[in-house]
Amino acid sequence: MQLILATSNSNKVKEIANLLPNKIELLSLKDIHYIDEIPEDHDNIEDNSLQKAMTIWQFKNINCLAEDTGLFIAALNNEPGVYSARYAGEQKNEANNIQKVLSLLGDNPNRKAYFKTVFTLVLKGVAYQFTGIFEGNITLAPRGNQGFGYDPIFEIASGKTLAEIPLDEKKKISHRGIALKKVIQFLESQ
Image (spheres, rainbow, N blue to C red):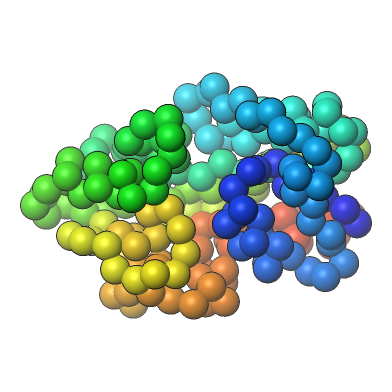
């Protein structure tokens, strides 16, 4: 089965392709020659995920998988949330996003946070959604060089950040991994 992943983020393509069973061939937007920016103009990740999936479905009429992820930090009124990728500006600079979070948190002792991922799978024009939530804490400074996005400041129960653990371990426990397991179980039941 072929699925188009509705993202231009090569890190997400790599991570998700690594999680899928071999019988699913994951295509990127480059593979289908989609060069436009996919709209994400909703105020929640569920609707953004659905919007991305339906945009690509309507473009190519091929089964599609889209996701939207947000980092929700308790002490920041659940920001950056839906604006996680562009928290420090439209250029979507990961280092600037991390610096903004750390600056806004300062020495606040409440470092509780969670990642939430929503996958939207469109099969033959019908949309299905799957959610994964992963709780942790925001560190005082970045640690590790694995992963991407906020991984260097997201500390998990082991005391390591997501950027300090191998991808194979991350994919088993992360928000994206949790949600994608649900997608895979659904696909295998079809």
